[in-house]
Image (cartoon, rainbow, N blue to C red; front, side):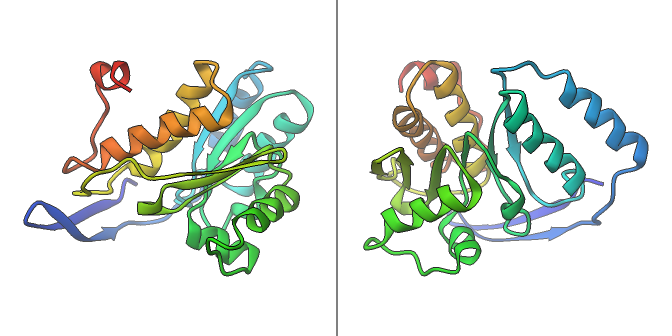
Length: 212
């Protein structure tokens, strides 16, 4: 089931990656087990979703998560796959990249329309704190009537493996620490910048967290 990912590296930097994989559909029993797990989540807890569109997060499960967010005060943070982004409504935050957000909103995103883009993402999907990642340019986000552009923290990029997942996990960690959305994103951005400065999927250490 797991994909085989092959990375081509030259002079310590990743040039490209190829994936060999077979997509699958969940069995009915697996879907039912997932529903039971979701129903056990308590109000005020947070679900973290990294959607790669590999077959596990089908529409039925996504709809269940959205229903929990709407009706049971369960929050979720999601890095959505472009094919599924329109299903992820009522999220605490979503973190599509610039290309994904541009395709979903059917808008060309540039420095002159960041506010407009975040407004539309918030309105179309009813997102509490919309965020768009900009690669080497960092990320942009909105909190009510406040907007922020957080520059990238990376000094030199060697391998972007896991950078999006690291940012997502860092955002949740910041939330758990009681940071507001902008401070949590700054925290997450530092972790993502750290992860791309190593070759391979770098896992931040305890000292990394202590030094942020």
